[in-house]
Length: 333
Image 1 (tube, rainbow, N blue to C red):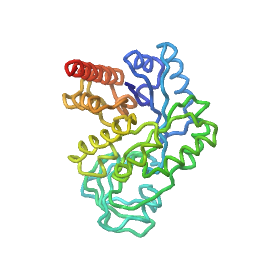
Image 2: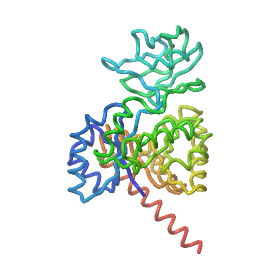
Image 3: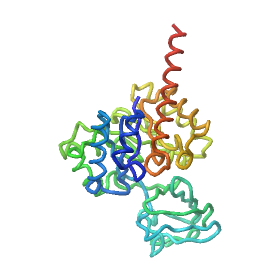
Image 4: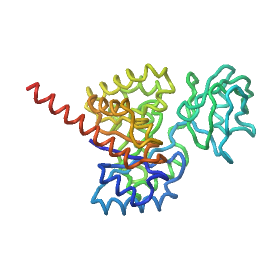
């Protein structure tokens, strides 16, 4: 079983990273939606120092931008007041042009993993005016989900190609590709890795929308590991349908003998709480029973108040699940 954290302000120092390794962390993710690999030298130095101190040999995953839609750079966080109107593009909130061209009245947009919800009222192709149905604070580079819109941005961005050029020398062992839509996306990434002399780096295909779920059978031969990424995946279906989607994806991976990872909100309450909810530890336990070969914390370690405690709960809960499976196996013989 692999246990991943996400590198961020809450755990970027060598002392905290070393503590995470001592709790059982075996790998770490670096989210390149917010920063380029060329600007992470200090964090990576701290990671190497911590790994040496803890005698660990961690996996290093980079999470590319890929064909993901995100808010652009904001001068400062924007408070979106429920019931109000906000402008996208044209000097308002910066969003990708491909999204503005596809919007029509009535289209809904989910921002920041669905924390905020907008409904398009009027659009020109260069800007759109939206009613704020679910408000909150919006920050730069947060995710955008547009259920029902047919968009096809390029598999890799210019910054993705730049990051891939640096991946091998930075010690990257795996690349996570968001919003995988078909086998062609994975083949494009595989070709890009070969082109920069890093064909040995593994590919982690992230299931983040219904298209990815539908195409999972064709993805399996081309991915080293499947990632059931429940944050954006939960934006593309009613949340009450998400558990069944996760179960179906896990079953497909098991049948194909393909390792899979479960990620997003495993211990979400531990952003602010030192102890998780009972539902969260049950979620981790069940992910292991379903056959997950890896589990990953995201904001819990990157920006949470209790990164080390979160890793402890993740590893110990999964350990109990593995012990339970062994007992079940023994009783069945």
